[in-house]
Each structure stands twice: as structure tokens, then as C-alpha cells.
Length: 279
Image (cartoon, rainbow, N blue to C red; front, side, top):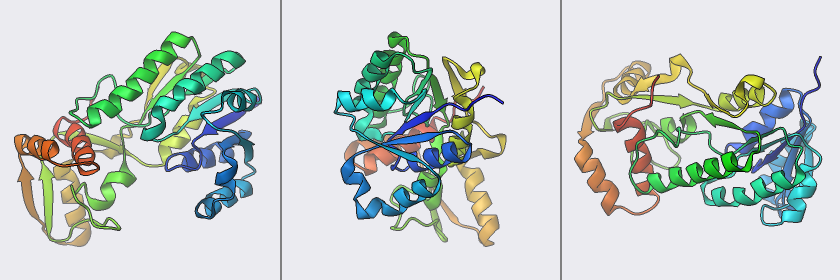
């Protein structure tokens, strides 16, 4: 039986990262997480850290802004997975530099785990977010580092908890009376949850995914906005009042609102108005 690769996960205590770490450890990979010393002592992260400890995860002290610590951490592993959030996407250039210096990493998976940034149709501010990921792709391709890109479309937990409402309550819950539907509700979208982390981990030692894009597209997770509303209505046994917002009004709303609402609306627009790239 082949030995499973040692995996370093960067951004492992974040929203997607904690699922990735868990998937790696449960799959039997020696799993390492790059953490700041301050994170280990952060009370708000203690439940995540304790769960990692129970899974036998190793902690490596380091920082994306400290090249020496990155090189030291990467020397001990064979695969590097980045799950950093939007605000740290540009920090992955330092990660690419460190991986290239080490030289022996057999696979790097950058932080994508969303729509295919080279094919998605979007407007600002989502357009710039996708562009930042695309720039990392180009830098990775130019570096010569072996890679796998994981495109898992939109993360269900972020959107479906409120049934894709523009201004969801806190905590987010699906509507039970009126539902706002952007566009005509017909374009198909693809959603995934933390299971895409399981597929990601399976890909790291698979030669078929080397220097390729892995598309995670479960057939039973492809729905239009109208489909989602119908499913929810069937679940609660009640018909909702649908309020459709035409695309031109969606675009206007994006242009006159501020972050984070404009970001949420532009993401919704790319997914539920322009639709998923199906092939």
C-alpha cells in the first residue's frame, strides 16, 4: 500500500481550512497546519485547535509574511494546500516562492474552491476577487511547480442558509413568507459543502489531477434559484411570495451599495443570473 503524502495546510483554522484539515487527517495523511503562535493561544480558536489535536494533527509555527518560516515548514512535507481567505490571496505569492525554493513539493493546491475564475462571468467587486485568484494561477503556471486547481463552485453554507437572500438576518435563516429571487430564477447553479474537501484530499496523490483543474460538480447539487425555492416550499409545506428582481435592477443595486452587500450581490449575480459553466 502506497504511503500517503505529508500535507501542509495553510489557513487551516479558517472557514474552509478547518474542513480541509479534518478531511486530510481522517484520510490518513500526516497532516500539518501552519499557525501563528497567537492562534494557538486564541480562545476563539480553541475548539478548532482541540479538534485538530484529537485528530493527531501537527502544528508548525510560521507566518505567510515570514519567508524563512515558510521554507522551514515546507521542507517537512510533500503537498501544500492553501485555504487562505480573500484578504490573503496575494500572500500566496510568498508561498509559491517558498515552495519553489524548497524544490521537492510534488503538488500545490492554491486557495480557489469556488467558481472557475477563468470562465466565470462577473461584475465588480466579485470580478476583482476572481481576478486575484486568476493572477495566482498564472504565477503558479509560470513557476513550474506541480499543481492541482479545485473548482467546486459556490459553497452552500454561505448562501443556502438564507436561501440566497440579499440581506439575510443574523444568524441567517431561510424566509418563510417572502423570497427575493434575482434574475428570472432559471439559470442553473452548482453548490458544494465541506465534502469538496474530501475530494480535494483524494486528488493530491492522484496522477490524473496533476497540473489540471478538478471540477467538483455533484449532479444532485445542480439547481436553479426557482428549483431551490420549490424544494424549500415542499419542505415547509407552504408557498412563498416570490419577488423577482430583473438583472438591470440587480446591477444597479450592486453599483449603489457598499461592501459587503455589493460583494454578496455580485457573487449572486455571477452564480444565479449568469449561471454555472456546465459542460
